[in-house]
Length: 209
Image 1 (cartoon, helix red, strand yellow):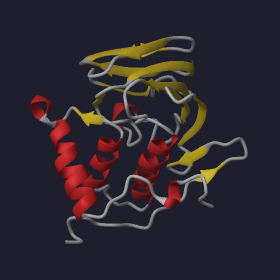
Image 2 (cartoon, one colour):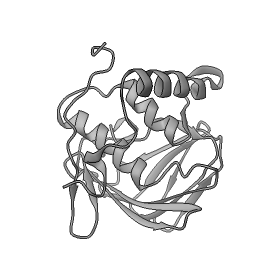
Image 3 (cartoon, helix red, strand yellow):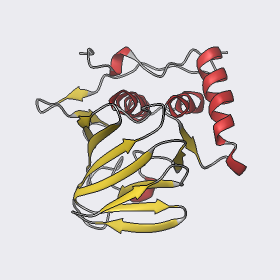
Image 4 (cartoon, one colour):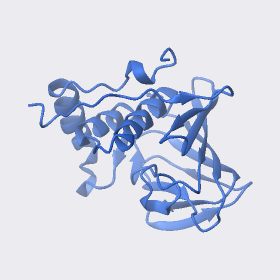
């Protein structure tokens, strides 16, 4: 069944002296800013001059259109311009502005390619019984996706849904709120139980070289 659940060599992200993790050959950098057990804040910088992050909503690093089962998410722009889609309505934020997204609201965000500058944003997720969005999720989700992109391989849908299921994140692509069922059946049962996919890989852990 390897054709259903393809595996590829995972590439350990580079780490900068300041603690940043680099994905897509440096196009996206992330830092853990703060974590208190109830919330987690990540700093993320998206490069405007890179095809993986700087071509608007279609950039490979743009999160898929999704919603959180339990968590509230807040975006605080430090520099650059953040474009977002919240429940089908698009907007923009500049440095010093923020937006709060409650649970179960459809959303995604991307760098505004027309500005010619990088996007530096702090993303905070809080609430719910599962931390969901944390450093482990970021490193594994983007680490896996970056490994695929840099090797010209397509990511496994089963693997991606396994990541999302573990973080209580649901895709909007599935009709009538069946996305949560897709997470469980395709991500958890097929991806993890049958396909052997994981949600935490040693290549993306703090102990990796």
